[in-house]
Image (tube, rainbow, N blue to C red; front, side):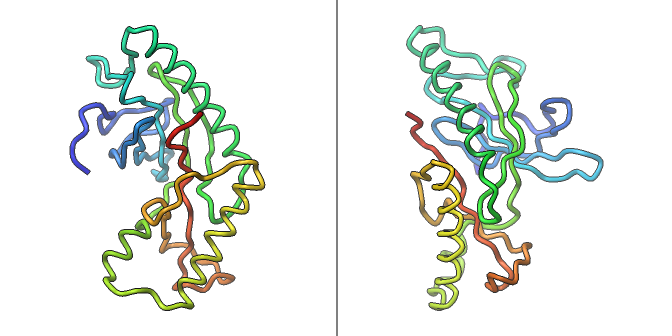
Amino acid sequence: MGKDNSSLPAGTVLKGKYRIKSHLSSGGFGKTYLAVHGSRNTKVAIKEFFMNSANQREADGVTVSVDRTKENADAFSSQLAKFKKEYERLKLINNVHVVKVHECFEENGTAYYVMDFVEGDDLMGRLKQRRTPYAEKTVLGYLKQILDGLAAIHSAGLLHLDIKPSNIMVDAHADFPRYPLEHEIIKPIINFPEIS
């Protein structure tokens, strides 16, 4: 991904224990980073609440501020509460096919939540790389895993709202014999593009 001047710089430490390695992606309501923590440098993904329409970085490159208009301040406050509520809902989901969230905290004028980092590619990238369709057996195996993850999401009273190949991660390091798909596991990324 290209340089995003509103992203946290590599090396930034959050909550005294998560060190940002790189910026992974951005959307209208947040930025996602690869970070490491602990003596083993365990990889995690951290989602930062950041409204492109209302936020900017302060001169320190870390602190988030809100555009001074009352409308933007109100929108930021309202959406920040929804971001934290999203975390509270997501932490209830415990399914091998859904990225696990671990903690939420406030710092630098905004909020963050920490989740598992899925080492791998999104399904769209895999499809483009292959240039040929997957065999029916593989597609059915992927679909079974995706539907299992979605069932867990739905049983928590949530909807995904953005199912597409670019939001489905293929974890090549997982070994779950009940889904024998070249030892890969599918994990939909929970994404709420328009939290209302």
